[in-house]
Every structure is written in structure tokens, then in C-alpha cells.
Length: 273
Ligand code: DGL
Image 1: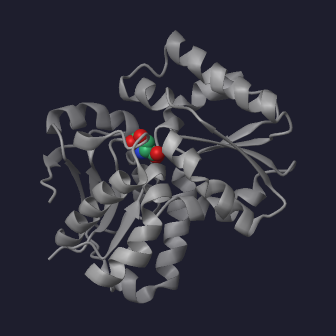
Image 2: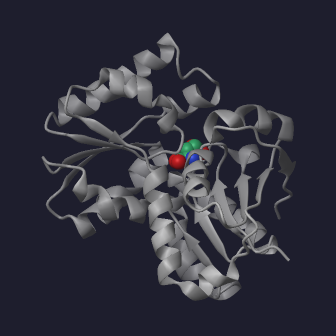
């Protein structure tokens, strides 16, 4: 029986993270799930994001996954801690669920020279304050300036991320952030959709300000985690397979997915709950 690594997102965005993980660690089996039927998660309450994420984590466990990565910032910010501390000990104490916030917070100090970092994400991620809390655990000297960019996910979802409309909303949020904190030298794209806007974002940034996408950071962190946890690593099967699931229309998923994943995918329908 296959025991793959589970990669979860509210929709397509986590494919940008999965892409980096599959490139770095191609030997493992993987199952990706996008909860497209209930996306976006970005504006939903703590309770709702927790409930949806937990249902999906339970689905991954039924699929045989010993390890699940929440490749979604909103789910990592609003559901991960409760799942790790409250749900896992009850439902599957031997399994592990990891997120994307801590691995990013651990390394961000090596990117900034001014100790002033911008964090852009969904309303849910930003309002949770998770990035500020986690970054300051590792780097108390860093000032974190956060801003929610609620228009960016819909622009990417609707394929409008290279248009004049996208250009307007990219400039709008960047201006707001950099006017508030002109000493920012590093901007973290703390949402799985934002790497698709990197070209436009970089066009509007002053020289010397760089962006960070999370895919390669999360992939490196996972490789390190598996090395430090050999018993878990050995529980994962290794035939290099990748299966894609969505809770909504599979044809729609397949049409969008290649933009995020960089190659064509064929998804299957997942029935949650
Ligand atoms: N994947 C989510 C994130 O990284 C963004 C999309 C959503 O709002 O569901 O925060």
C-alpha cells in the first residue's frame, strides 16, 4: 500500500510549493489535495478554516499519508496549531502535520540587511499575526510590517495576473506597504498564489528590495525534517508517484493547475467527510 506525503491547499496555490518539493525530493510518493469547492479560505473565520482543514487532513490519513504539509498560509496560520496540539493526539498520534510559516520564519533573518521585513498575505494570514509572532521568536531584532492584499488571490484565480488591472492592484498594495515602512529591504510573499505575480511585483519595487517565495524554503525545510526524523522518513513509500485530487470539478482543476505546477496534471475527485 502506498504511504505518500500529503500536500494540502485550499485550491491551486499550494502547487507552487509542491512544485519545489517534488523537484528537490522526487523519490517520494505524493498526494496533492486542493479544497477548491470551499476555496478561498482567506476571508474565513478561525473555526471554519480549522474545520475544513481538519476534514482534509483526515482524508489524507485515510489515503495512507504518514505526513501532511499544509502548503497554505491561511490554513497554517489558522488551523495548524490546533490540529497539532488538540486533534492529532486524539486521532493519529503517530502522524505529523506541518505548515509553511515556521520554516519561513526560521530563515528570514538571512535575507534582510535592514531588519525590516514586509509580509504580504491574505486577510486571514495577516490578521492572525502568525508571521510576526514566529519571526520574532527567531529574530527579535526584525520589525515585521504586514499587509493584507485581498485582491491578489482573485486576480490569480481568474487568470488576470498579467493584466493592467493586476498592475494597478500590485502597485496599490506595494505603495501602501513601502510608504508605511520605507526601510523594508525584503518582502515575503506569504500566500501560495503570489509567486505568479512576482514579475509585476518586482517591476514596481525600488532597487534593493527583494521578494521571497516560499516554495524552495519549504522544500529545504522538509528535506531537513525528514533527515532528522528517520522513522517517519522510512514510513513514506518511494516510487516517485504524484496523484492530484480536488474537491471540485476535475477538468477545471486540470485547466488551472499547470499554471501553478509548471506541467500538465490530471486530477481525481476527492470526497471529503
Ligand atoms: N492558499 C491560500 C494561502 O496561501 C490563499 C488562497 C485562499 O484564500 O484560499 O493563504
